[in-house]
Image (cartoon, rainbow, N blue to C red; front, side, top):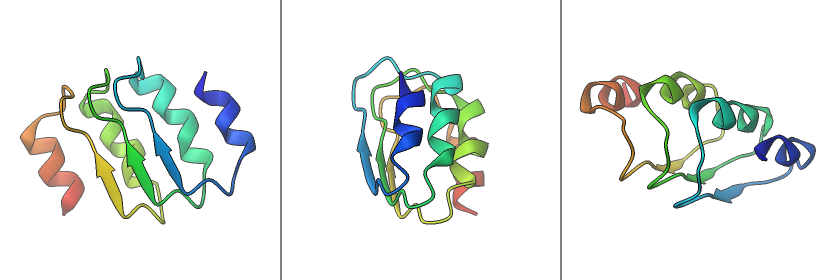
Length: 79
């Protein structure tokens, strides 16, 4: 799964649109220090993933449309 991507620390863009990504799977991506763009639209992530997203230092764009994330959690992430 996503654990294999951890061995590619120079990755800057990951597109997982429509893949069966879960909150626990997304946690593996936190080990990608140069990730700038993350597309996880139409996946199984929930509000539990948003604290993980907040850990990304270089993240400039994230697409979470079509997920089970709440408006309140998204607003907290943007703050």
